[in-house]
Length: 224
Image (tube, rainbow, N blue to C red; front, side):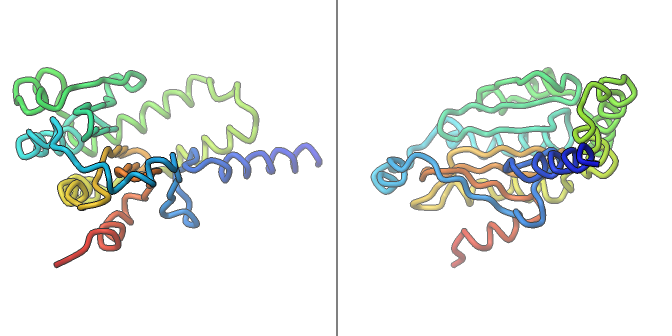
């Protein structure tokens, strides 16, 4: 009995200790702010926004980034506004990180070469199939009981980011970038975790659940 109680305690710790757990953000943590280097906070207003490589090609770039997430193989997308670095993860090669320069991603031929087309629902199904394949391989048998329960629960109940939420997030990047004092530095969107990771020019990081992103925008972007 004590072993079972300890096992359940470990399961609860794993699910509640980290900021984004194996099953994502909880209902208690719809949005999380992580404080960072205080020196960044103190010098926020002295560090004026400069026009980056992403800014220079923004209008041409954004339709392609939306295409990557909604109609092509990318399931995780990182956009570095300050350094012009775009990171992608593909469902066809899920354990490898790819890094692209922003200007390259404005070229339709480059997009065609590097990112195979796949319907959004089919992409979600590929992720589901990969987890099922891992389950059937017996690899999870190597895990402690509490981790097997977590993985089973996650695999049986996970839902991908809604397509309309993904589209909304990408459509608001220009607004986040144009905030006068606290402009966007980088953002990461992952359709399988339904979590948006955002960093501004001030310190720290914001973690927002995708379905709450509209509320985040309403709360943080002033309207005329």
